[in-house]
Length: 471
Ligand SMILES: [Fe+2]
Ligand SMILES: [Fe+2]
Image (cartoon, rainbow, N blue to C red; front, side, top):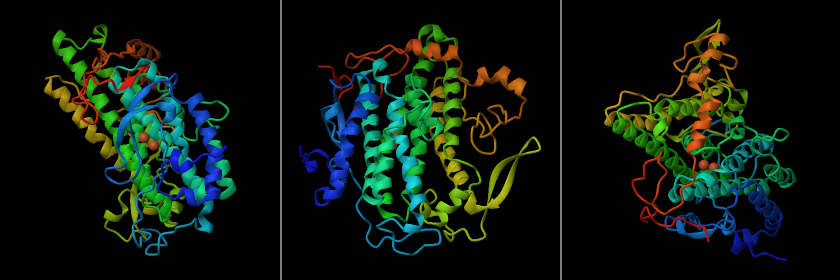
């Protein structure tokens, strides 16, 4: 059976003109669809969802809205338009023409970057697959599925690069993207945060706030890449990523809003009995998700990161806006470290510190939304502040592995950590409580009791629009 991929895979990469590539993707597509069926959103096949589908990268083309049966969603391959005469912006090749094919000497590093990024995309779909059963509203259910199909499309984006530019080992890597699974004991996803469970909607909103934001920073630094197809792919993915973070930020905001309303109404902070999530519990979820996301940036000092930079494969955030030589000759940078039981700051060659620098950009960005959550709390006259925990808190990678620190960054011993960690991180009882609130609400316009309604609907539709049809 021949499939007209021009029809089924919208793309702007002239797929129709490249028979070999077409055949390779043709072989991969059924495996992808099988994966979607087995590992994607549970029991979603019959749902018709008001989705945004990209059909081109032009302003009016990448956001087409309409009801789509989920398995019929058209996962397209899109690269941002080429920038004429684009040059490599950093590293030893700075000023040379951007590569249109894989530079042979950097092949394995480049493949590794693409595989690591690609692996996170289907992982998040797997992590979120059961959430549809407990949606707080049709609006939220639709947003969940929108994020899921776009993560699926991001996998397509990375698989396209592997197939188009890496030959046989690229095809093997593409197959393996569908064989590793989030949380699988034998074949887990590459990065640990993508093996954690996302079983409740507070976790989902924290995930899209913190973990998708890590995605933004990784994509932004890959968008600087001297390998032009990767740069163009990531630039387009970033437009979609913005929506995922919007879902996270407004989701947390709406939960905070609802909690504050109930606190005021009953004049108490003991609000669990009223079916909303108390602020200290929201803080615990924040502590958990933020700390595991800091790990995603890797070691504070990293030879890999230095190589990626000097090779011109992965730049810094908004490289072009940084005022320096973009080669970091002799430049230094301060990174945190743990020495003699104390947190110290070490001056190291800047080229080895690009993970840390990206993490700091990420932290600043994360803080901005937290400030907005705190404004909601303050506006209700409530004396409580959500905070991002210290970088030494609950870390599994980097300088603070094996170190016990409070969310404020005070070093404590193991015994105190064991005694206190239930105050800082979600306990089984906390998870049980939050899960107990996760009862599906599917009447158009209705919201679960623990979350406020959003300010507006999607794409100009009213809040009580039937964003998901079950028939
Ligand atoms: Fe993504
Ligand atoms: Fe995302």
